[in-house]
Image (cartoon, rainbow, N blue to C red; front, top):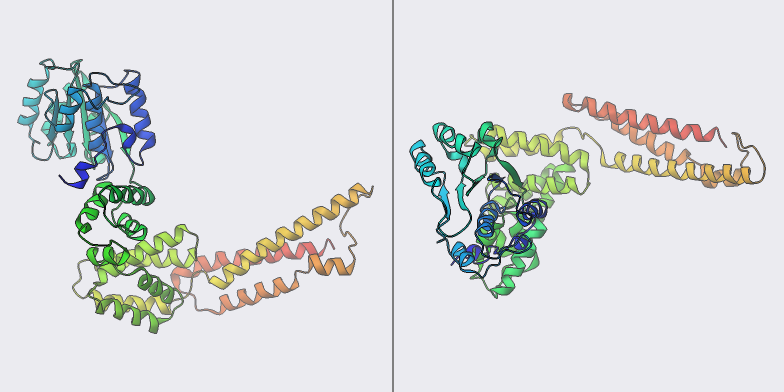
Amino acid sequence: MSLYNKYRPNLFREIVSQEVTITAIKEQLKNDRFSQAYIMAGTRGTGKTTTSKLFSKYVTCESPSEGEPCDVCGSCIDAKAGRHSDIYEIDGASNNSVDHIRTLIDEIKYPPMRSRYKVYIIDEVHMLSGSAFNALLKTLEEPPGHVVFILATTELHKVPATIRSRCQIFTFAQIEVRDISAHLLKISRFENINLSEEGARLIAENTDGSMRDGISILEQLSHNALIDAQTVEKALGLINEKHTCSFVEFLLDRDIENAITVYKEIMKQGKTTSQLIESIIRFLAGAIMCGDRVGEMSSTLKKLIEFKRNVQKESNIQLLFNLFIVDACTCTKVIDGALEDTLNKVDKRIYEIESFIKKVVKNKSASGETPKPPYNIDDKTADKHLNVKPVQEEVKQELASDNKAPIQKDDSELKKANSERVQSLLGRLNKFQAKV
């Protein structure tokens, strides 16, 4: 038995990272107020089919409790083994014709053999033909009281609106990297697989939020004495994170020589340009979420995604990517990192000045004065707390440096907005000098 099937959840509480959806379903089941038609929608490996199976297991269970099947009765055992006479699992991809649906409709009028309900799970329901959907429509609108339909799909937008309107829809989100990683480490302990935390994280990052894919990769690598980051990189054909990080740093710093050197080293290791592009996109997306050099990284990410889209059918992608590196390293910086640091410094300094002036006003008010600017602060105190000239000069220098850089057509609006921000901050700094 594969690890994925071996560790498929047997209870709702074992499903990972879908708490909101599972809680809503359990409340309906616990109160015996569930619908007769559901759609479970979401990307692959997020728990749609597992939840559908557990739903059918619950409604056919002989002694369910608090929204969970007992998991020990004969009905639960048969449901888990896939042999329950009142649970029907249908593959919508291979049973997608109108004749298949008509046969199903003929069957549903008969009562269940051993439980209160008959459950029909139609997987990949979006694969049904238009006529098959039309045949199913009337049954979903007025189903027999003993029937529950659960439709699972990875492409909800392909399910006709007439079908969606007759079903309760539960959406399954992609599973978080940390949740997949933690679950893989848990399985590895049970299976005596030597999986490192870095290896688990790297597997999780390359599953697109699919728990099934993560467990499949773990099983694929389980013969290794140690599954660490290097093992995962080699098995999945990934590029070393350090190389990706170095390449991006050189690209953002406009260091064309070192950027091309790192690129050549990656190619010598047998990696492809397409793999490098995917690695850079993942790295930039993660770095942007962390708030690191957001302006530059966002601009580079946008250009890289556009480049990927334009060259995906080209045969000489390696040459074209060399040209992309040259272009990225010679174009104007949209937001200069040093300037951004300075602007943040000014924001902080203004806050300090505002706090000091509020303190002065409060003290003067407490002593019975009516404080109005200028506050007649002595020179020593003013120099210590209100001296904004060094900061002003630094901002002006950065602004001058920024304005001397050649402006590309696409960068002009951003550069204008950036300059306006600097001028605004300088104006705010100037007003404090009038209060001294």
